[in-house]
Amino acid sequence: VFGAPEVEGKPVAESIVEAVEAVDPDRVFLDPLSRLRQLSPDDHQFHQLVSAMMRYLTDRGVTALFTTQSTEKQPDDDLQYLGDGTIELLYTDRGRSCRVTKFRGSRFAGGTHALTIDDDGMAMFPKLVPDDYLQQFDHEQLSFDNEGLDALLHGGLDRGTITLVSGPSG
Image (cartoon, rainbow, N blue to C red; front, side, top):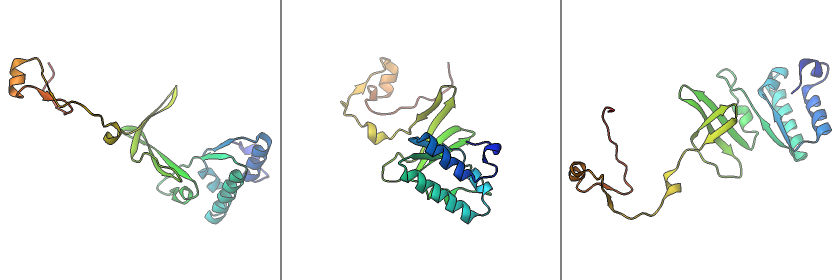
């Protein structure tokens, strides 16, 4: 949010407060909050700073979104308890995903959900939950219209079932 020349000689928190008071925003995004840890002399003062900042923004009716950069040496567990919600963004060899682990006062779709980030922005692909898509259907056999295959399957496939056809292409 602020470059080094803008914050030298006065605390970063004071600069953030001045910016919030000048703009009077509905939302504030701090990226990354974990950077403030490096500017604090110790963990205790860092926690006091973050708690005071969150209280200040909440008292002003501001919705705040913070990012952190969790590492093995410096996990962000101590920051997760402070917020009303926690969304974890993951990047693995299988691609990007998202997991909501906390959303105080509300229900949320648990588990890991796929996401993409490209030139058009971020797209979420929530994990499908079969019970959310239950539909009534008529129990009947569906023919392949192939006499030999229908004979093997005693008339065809039952509607509403899942069948895997396995073998080489072609």
